Length: 226
Image (cartoon, rainbow, N blue to C red; front, side, top):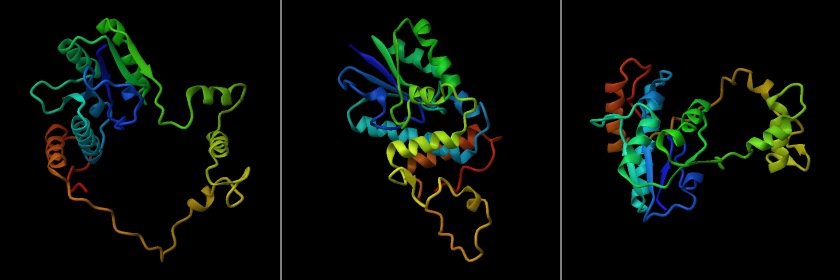
């Protein structure tokens, strides 16, 4: 069975659930830079550079690992404006039996993906994003019957479950957070280290130029990028 596996821009992990069980001899991975995702709000140019450069580097890592990869760039001759356009184009290029994707982090993207079975006449397996410490059912069980949903209390339950900064059933330091301290101004003698810097490689430099060209009205500047 040949599967089209879609990886979104914030799912750049070799252990993402959409890659579980992948057959490198039959399956194809689709990654695409999408105009709609870059413009639904005006992101800072450096954020766009970071995302698109990371996507291109990850696609190359997959190719180096012998995966078949279809990659759409925003500066291609025929770029895609929506995820659905890219998936439709990819589906027409191969004889796929199924589409697999990890659940997106944004509701509006999930609603678009739910339309794919009818659009493409193919089954779509939307898998849980296992990078989260809590599942949807975890939160639903915790929130059931509560009159108010306060993040602080859910956070405490997760601290206890995974023993994060805990001594037994009590938080290290004898209090759950130090928000009041963190709202104070920093000490004037505080030493702030220099920003970590790496020279951008050729891929990142190409993305910087693309972002400046395609998104001239977005805030900030793509360079210097480190």
